[in-house]
Amino acid sequence: MSIKFAAIGLNHSHIYGQVNCLLREGAELVSFYAPEDDLAAGFATKYPQAKRVADHRAILDDKSIALVLTSAILSDRAEIAIAAMQHGKDVMSDKPGMTTLAQLAEIKQVQAETGRIYSVCYSEHFETRSTVKAGELVAAGAIGEVIHTVGLGPHMIRNNQRPDWFYDRKRYGGILCDIGSHQCEQFLFFSNSLDAEVLSATVNNRGNPARPGLQDVGDMHLKTPRTTGYVRLDWFTPNGLGTWGDGRLTILGTEGYIELRKYIDIAGRPGTDHLFLVDGKGTRHIDCSDVELPYGRQLIADVLNRTETAMPQDRCFKAMELALTAQALAERGTVWAQ
Image (cartoon, rainbow, N blue to C red; front, side):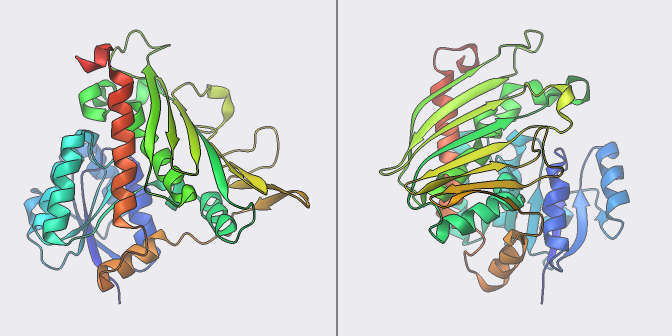
């Protein structure tokens, strides 16, 4: 037994990963809404089984649809998610799920009132096999107790391929809210704690003066009672790398450490999802290419069984709270705070 789902808003290509993680587990994509003809055409070519509807309310009113996906413009995602939950549907949003703390508060209120599932697909965890494998190793005690993490999220900007909203601070939410939310979720996951706070945060535009709304670099320092974490994000990946970014995560434990080279092992092994484990016995490389990605399967089960196996609802919200809090802290006294 599986579910029917639909998509509202296709503005980020992450929507393809969101759809695929459900299709490979047997869910049925039945329809989608996108006002942009070019985005709709590409999506329809990839998924001819899905009907394009002229009004998003056709999806909201379709009682056979259990789950709504969205990868709309970032500032629009909260409104879509709230409407879906109020129409009795569960939600899987691309990250970030919202761009303001006020939107987060409203989503939390509606989720509590409706009892629907609100999930953010933090793809650098759920759709990255090396991160899933690291979680298994940490849970098995491979590096002892986790005491510190370092998350690096470099991205390639591709200026000539980005829509105007990408450079509008109000619409994309800021660099810490956007790509930083990935890192906040992973920090909570590997720390195994929701008692977390932001110690410091910065954002800046260092290399794109013609795009004053863009934040091209940012960082934040996080802590729980027993774990600290540092995160750096940027849009400075050079064209010569060969992929969109050299995403890395280092997890330090009391008995060893794990380093993930998620998307490339520079000047080394081919492919993605490289995990390096260092412990008292030595150093080894683990190829994670065959690791199962359970998020889609678990979310479908949660929709059917009203459980929280894919991700605890509290961690979903706390990750966005940290990212949004860091964003607000970093912008104090800057042009973006005006």
